[in-house]
Structures are given as C-alpha cells and as structure tokens.
Image (cartoon, rainbow, N blue to C red; front, side, top):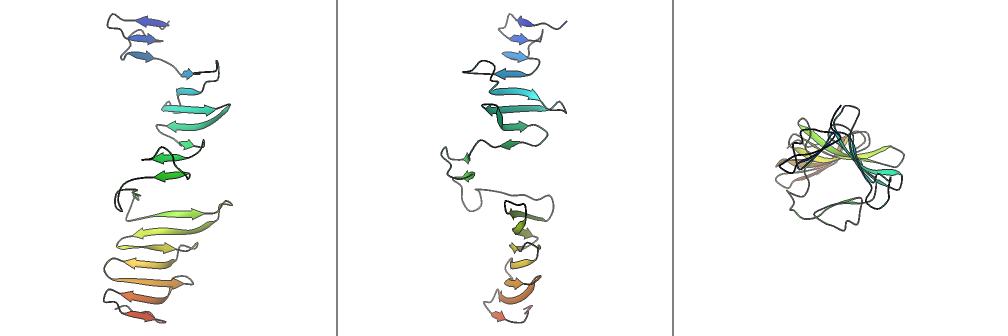
Length: 178
C-alpha cells in the first residue's frame, strides 16, 4: 500500500507519497477549510481528464474554478487586473493604448461580440486584415476603417452611404473607391 505519511531526512513531507519531490508532496485531492471544519473552501484536485484543477467556494457554491485544460470561471464578484478595487465585472488598470488589453484571433480576423441577457447578438467590434470597425448583429460592416485608406459608413447589409478617404475627401450617397 502507498505510504500514508513520510518525512524524509531533508525535511520533505509526503502525504500518500513515499518519495516526496517538494517540501510538501500530496498524492490525491487536497481540501482546505481555514475557519470551518469540513467546508472545503479551497480544493486542489483534478478534472475528469486528470488535469489540474483549483476550486474556491463560498458557503456551498463554487465561485472560482480554474482548470489546466477545460472551462474556467469566476462568479464570485469583480476581477481586477492592475487594481485591487475593481468597480465593474472586469477592470484593467494601467498600460497604454497598445498595452492594456490584447485580443488575438486564431487567423487574420478577430473581434469582440456583444450579446444581451437573452443571448441575442447586438453587434461586434471587428478587425480583419487592415480593417477595423463595427459590425451589426448580422455581421455586416456599419463603420469600417481601412488602414491609411478610408473610413466608410454603412447600413442595410454593408450598403455604403458615406466615405472619407485618406486625402480627406468626403463622398456622401454613392460609393467612392478613390
């Protein structure tokens, strides 16, 4: 049978391990209940695929679930990056225009989807190739800015109504490719 507890001459302690590889080496899930016996406030365990998992709960509900290979979530309140007092669900403090947040797509295009509480898509902030702008709920351009070329304004399935080119010329009413 595996060792229940081993203490090595170098001070390493093994629980469920006869050969601890660190100051404390535990073979099996770990439940920590700092102030309430049996509350299992912190759990270090594995998921169904045997990948590392950390769970933090409040009362009897898991509020934080971080998995090495699986879905992770935070439902216990606000998350702050660069701040210890976030005032919204996610607040990122610090950095400049090019270092506060990076969203990297898997190909040439990436974006942010906006959705209402019923799960309906309201629109997108979208970047593709040299263009960045806003798409409507149907994924059609409403405002498209093409790098060093133009800004165009559209409705009704990307129908262009106004364009400002890089020279500052404004065309209203009919598409202008110059």
